[in-house]
Length: 118
Image (cartoon, rainbow, N blue to C red):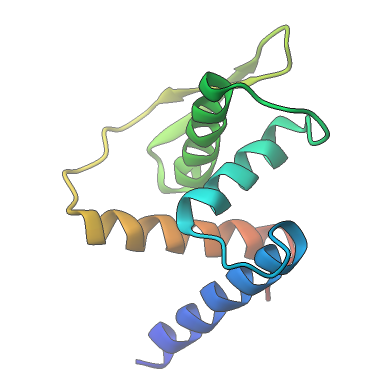
């Protein structure tokens, strides 16, 4: 139970920090946070993205977030600087709630690994 509360508190801290920094205090949802991670991973922070690029940014983020779980492996960076991943293991079928839990856990770990969270 304590672990769950701790993870919940960590998630709320991430949402609060990112919302304050990127959304003028409005609460960012899971998809917005995934998008921001994609932008961070691409490293092209100060530019506008087309609709298809936004989808690709979310894909980059999901691959990066699930890499430590063994689902993806970094492959290469293309000539435009976009990272590419290859599938190592197929994700098991997950219900929507289970997907959300997995992504939140992966995001918490991402921010712990980057030193933003303890």
